[in-house]
Image 1 (cartoon, rainbow, N blue to C red):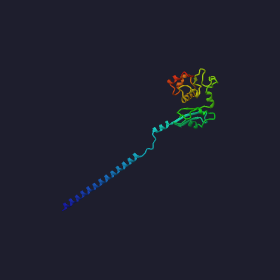
Image 2: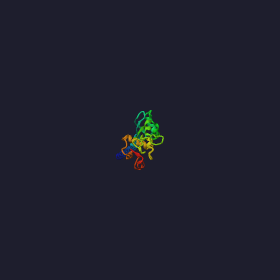
Image 3: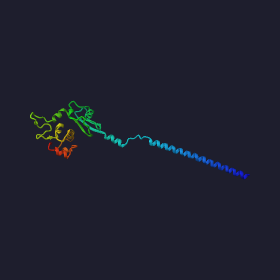
Length: 214
């Protein structure tokens, strides 16, 4: 009888122990699963969150779209101005206070786009008038005025916009480049120096060299 009782007692303890371990293991498994799910949701939320940053390419693009030019001459407020790429000359002049009272507004192509580093010079009426060659009644040059020489060549150091465009191959835009370069550099020493103007290379020079002088 005593032996049966002892055996029953140990059997009861074994059942209770096994049941307790099973319960704890199940609880641990649930806890671990919940922690794993929480980490997954946290990672998903972090991955989908937008980043409030500006890339270097965006900053570089903004810098490339800025254009700096020097507006001077017959304007009310000459100076260096910053514009968006594609800005037109008339907008740059308006930013500089508009034309001065003596400005020759017809000397510029107001619809042309500006370029970075450009010197935009607005001439006066007197300046453009002096640059044009006066002609006598017979249609011959009346002297050495403006950019014309005695042999009919165009002096690239003194010729104005209108006279420079009479050279075959020199348009209005290229003529302004010539004027801008000589203002910044102090003039041309030889006719070959005209090739220092952006856009004028050997090919164009060979076409105009017989039409120009200094």
